[in-house]
Length: 85
Image (cartoon, rainbow, N blue to C red; front, side):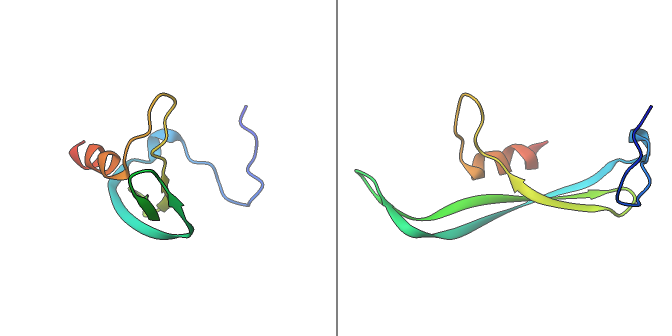
């Protein structure tokens, strides 16, 4: 049995929604205190923002994580993978 939602919205069956589109945006955010590395100084961090449009018009926006369990990939690599599929 499903628990009732507490925010007044009704729960839809999973089959009722489909993803219509996924957009990605790369955003360079300045770092408050630059990171000094042995070969460079990092003054900004690139984040990937993901926008998902569902068949019923719901739009979701979030940050796409580029950190996985065994590797750290660039936001550009993740964006390329999403765009390709």
